[in-house]
Image 1 (tube, rainbow, N blue to C red):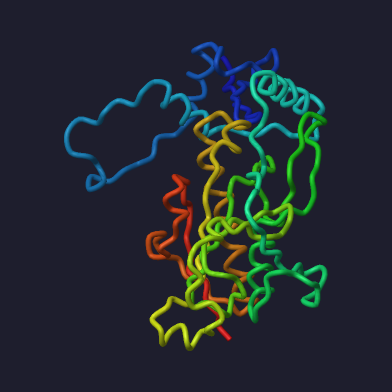
Image 2 (tube, rainbow, N blue to C red; image 1 turned 180 degrees about the vertical axis):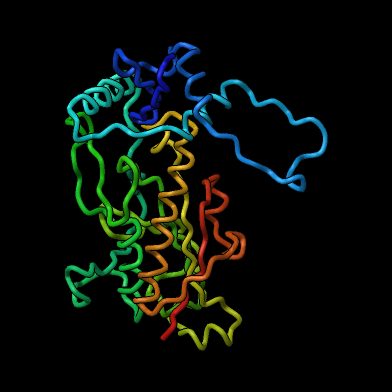
Length: 302
């Protein structure tokens, strides 16, 4: 009787652990998957949970993948063998296409944000009562800490929040309403540039009605006083390295790390972060055909 095979994951490619060593799951023998499927215990269901009519059959490929995921383990990257397999896969990917850029190039005018490491006395072009808090929030969720090398093959960016494979698939956009003088930013839409810790003003030529009027005057004039934070996903950063459907799952795990960090930092910085629909921000960024993963209204709690 053949012993059940374990399934290993390297860069989200599947390998069946056979007696002869790792075997690429895409070329594995049917018996390898059959032993995996046989190891999965069926889940008991009550009569109320049973679907009406005949149960549709799972696609064979889907059934094999689900069975494998239920039993799958991950290679120990302390092992030279695991690193060698991953390096070989990455060399194959690099031969076809370079990895996506970790940051979108900037070209517009910049509003430099105060950096916590330099204190609030540092001379920057963006300055308001709560600008340091906004800068700290963006730095904590999206900031560039340093660049590192992955297996000597390509560079990756390390940030304050964890991300599988250092893919960091999220970018930040900030929207400022005309009456939000507390933010210390001109009205408009901005993109956060992590490597510079600055905001690129995407619509710098827009009307600047209400600038300097102050929050109370802005409210009296019917101007919005809110700041929006829009988190967009760049799927290509994940999918270049992890070319399996499980990459979507990992993207959501990364989003959980990010949103929890933003919540904690906002509370500590006396900022109120309220989840909203992107349309509620009136943000031109929504029209840029970006994949919006989360949107918040940011307000001063002091």
